[in-house]
Image (cartoon, rainbow, N blue to C red; front, side, top):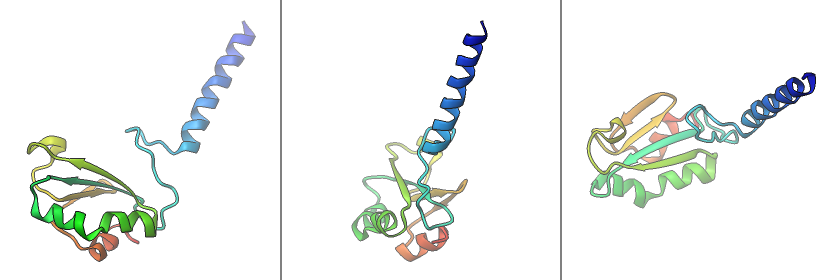
Length: 114
């Protein structure tokens, strides 16, 4: 009986330590701990027919954030309004806040504290 309890405790400790080492958030998304920015994760919401979203895509801002500052960028296509609670695109989400509208690379960098 003691062996079963000890084994259970060991399994729980292994699971907790693995989650801590991997850096999983409660949402299941992996956090990039190698970022040099205050906010190392950015959720980007876009529509394929959005001219400002196309501009963000063409200027390479999101890729630069990943390459230069180690920001983990998650991209979400908004197929219909209200999806993900989004009613305007582009929308940038980080640190619990959402910023709507086009932003240049330097503006996004400043928002993330890079």
